[in-house]
Length: 198
Image 1 (cartoon, rainbow, N blue to C red):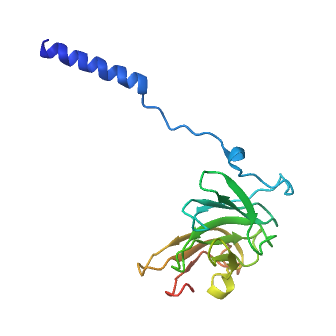
Image 2 (image 1 turned 90 degrees about the horizontal axis):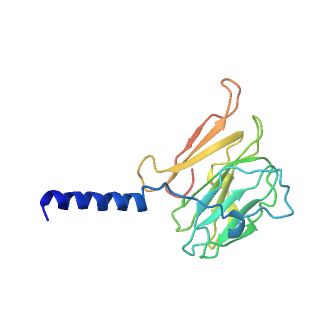
Image 3 (image 1 turned 30 degrees about the vertical axis):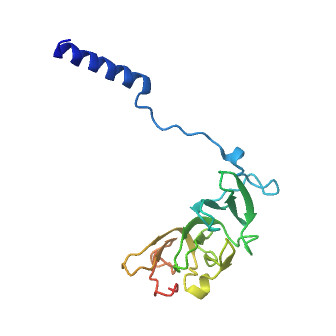
């Protein structure tokens, strides 16, 4: 067989392979209901939450989902059983939020080996203090926003964890709704002091 013929056979085989396997885009399937991530029937279906966070909150090696449910409603954690099936539970003392949740971000800010969460709250231009859920282990949370120095008042819409000064401790940036000269808190960068306080 000539080199040219071998090259043609090779190109045809490559073309056939490309046509049968193709360059298919990623495919997604909605498994919300079948995985157990549902609103409890006792909650209004017209409510909504924002800014859900994936993290291994109970330390069992798989990702759980923390999801605020909407205005004045509880924060839920959907516990992953390890096979992608979830069961929901209201987070600790947060049976009802004092204001609308706008974001939920997870991180181990106190370097104790478990995942904590910060929840931004607010309605309009005012709002209660945000919530810092400190994980006591195995997904048991206590709100320590005031104690840790991150109980921002106002209307917070977003937050992000990051070690901006490279000291090995996560810092927190909070984005707030504010007006220039309006007396409302602007965006705030909280620096971790190395003890999990800001």
